[in-house]
Amino acid sequence: MQLASVTLREIGLPLVEPFRTATGMVDTRRLILVELTDGDGTTAWSECVAEAVPSYTAETVDGAWTALADLIIPLVLGKSFTHPTDVHSALWSWVPDQPMARAAVEMGMWGMAATRREESLARFLGRISERGAAPRKTVATGIALGMQSDADELLDRIRLALRDGYRRIKLKVSPSLDLEILRSACTQTGTRAGLSVDANGSFSLENKSDMAILEEIDALGLSMIEQPLPANAFEQHAELQNRLRTPICLDESIASDADAELMIRLRSGRIVNMKPGRVGGLTEAVGIHDRCRLAEIPLWCGGMLESGIGRAYNVALASLPNFTLPGDISPSSRYWERDVITEPWTMDQSGMVTVPVDRPGIGVEVDRDFVDSIVTRQAKFSAS
Image (cartoon, rainbow, N blue to C red; front, side, top):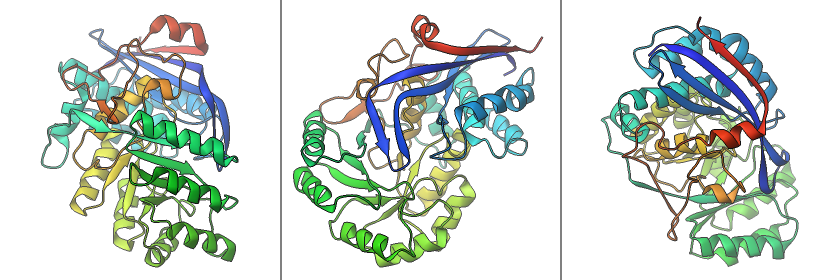
């Protein structure tokens, strides 16, 4: 593969409803879409999942745009690559602090390689994972619900999620949460779906009040507590996991395969939420999958409010065998009134999303006219 051109497009994609977490609220998702074209005219699309502000990680949309335009694209444009893993190697040492920007190009090259091979991305990933694996044809889906201050509203949202067939329900929490609301959510959910909480690192092991709340949460018998402590707190997570019965799931903590190895060695958690953008792309994501599979640590694929393009990469990744828990890969209608792909992602009544295993590349077509209508800035880079 030899890239002839790369086009960056920033879009503003309005959410069906605002999404609130421990770190803020968003009602319109700023996204960078990346269109890559090789010398033979083969095209692949990907996206950068960095957020508008440095809340989830230090990366931002504006910083990622600069990194892509000034550092990453010049490193790959016009260069020949035998395999997408070569792109990962080329970018890792030169742009270490912008994994989401790196991932936008690296994942796009995976999509392009699969397209050139006339093979689905899911099958391509399965063949290079540890011991090889045929991709699953459907993947189980969970839903993440933003923070709600009103118990009745939250319970109504849970009721609708159960009606729609979601296999897992995740609630955003913080140290200021109302435990009674969470208890009501447990009663509402019952055994019909797994219920978990995500703190986005907002608790502290040294804070007695925080620990009291975590102990109360632990008594509820949830399927997991996601990222209770800050990202770099591996030893503290290990101490906390030793005190809790509920499995701790690490998200922000796992930025590389080395982090996964450290988690396993220290026993900092029992589950991993994998977001390929967070770890710099699919090469590292597959490596983490293989390491966790050997250690019998289950994974699930998290979401970053991706458009249908980013969702395609997540669905392909989630088809690997060690993604045994329902992922945040909701249908397009969960987030967008209109997605950027011609055939939006859907989910059946049993909470399963179909993997496009028999369609080449990422398995979706971009709605170029719609994308053009919501572009806020654009730049094209050519090899000649």
